[in-house]
Image (tube, rainbow, N blue to C red; front, side, top):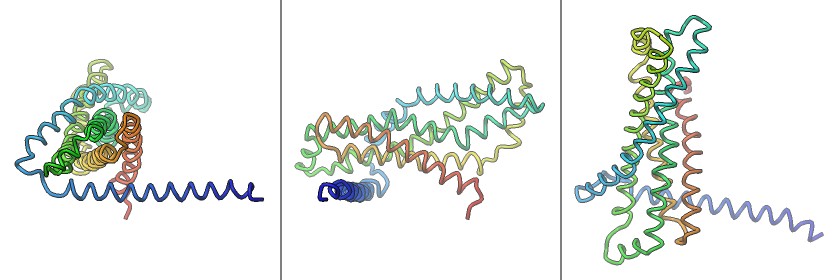
Length: 267
């Protein structure tokens, strides 16, 4: 009888332990955000912030722009095959621009950002922890949260919206290359349909707001995973993987919530 009960009891115990660990991790992450993220970067830390902007933003630019170009081209190609059946191929510019500005640019740029910059941030901070650099800073009176974590958090928050805008612009140009230069749509119609149907506040700014939220969340997850990991090579590897997985799930989940609020007429 005890053998039969051991299985269910063990499962309940494991579930309870996992729940406690998750709640504890959320609490630690919240405290890290409160201590490192409250307040604008100081003048002393401005150079660190700019350096991290280059690390997480500029170094991610190539993969984001190339991805935006190809996604815009694929959108135009797929959209044309659908619209031409209804005789509405001149609306291709509207379809490409709205798809990118509202949805694809913020989400895909955030996923690429998580894979390139987020994982790098986790590995970098984790290596500092493993080599006791963070402990050394504390011993000489330097707060590692302000010196190491905060510049990276703010850099990700600012960089992702800029990357998203670049993704959208290049994607729209990629759609123009396919639609106008390859498939022969009248160029004036491509730009006119976009100009007539894209709203700056409702479409462009909502996409930027999405990317701001995604940038904060991805950077938050990345720096927390690096700061909270077990300081071993295996711990760094696992934390880097968790950063990409958790960030991707967070981006997709938040995208649904933000889309429902912005475009779903909820509330």
